[in-house]
Length: 200
Image 1 (cartoon, one colour):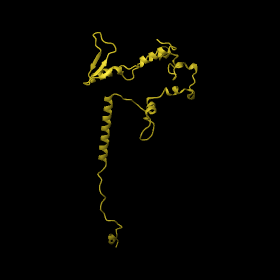
Image 2: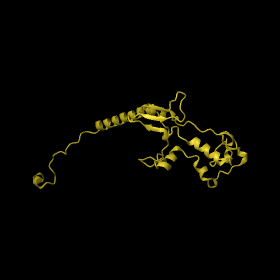
Image 3: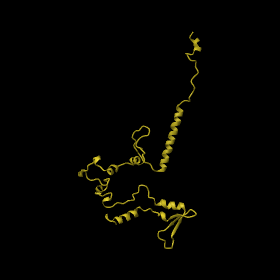
Image 4: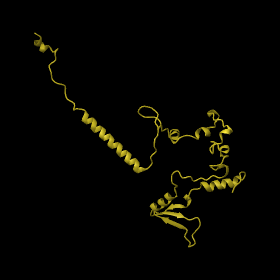
């Protein structure tokens, strides 16, 4: 545990928290392409290095990657999500909303930048970071409302397949509706001088 004034302990704690799962200094490739990892402390049987096939090593690394949207940080005390004092100590004023009787000023201009950006949607963040605006229709320029965010590859594949079938059917229907193009009929012109005998 580190107190707020113990900067050396806090630095050591931050270094410990932010260190990677695998030390690159102890990682190397053997002459035949295998991955060699030096252990920090030898095993009881004297083993100092572990050898992996490249795919096995990647599989072990992939197992360390957490699943999407899993909360890996735990907060306690006033920083805990359910703390009634969290609003007072976080820059974005996140936490349990106080009672209406406390009379918070909700004027937008009085809010800090962190408070203004705390309620950004993922669409707004996508636009801010990557300049990709999916809130505006590319055809008419109108506002687009996202009704679902689909991440399952199987469902995405089914939707895309359905859209391709729908487009193919629409194109086939258009081809059936329009008659084939023909050349104009060959009729003598009324104002052709060679046909003047028609008016004698």
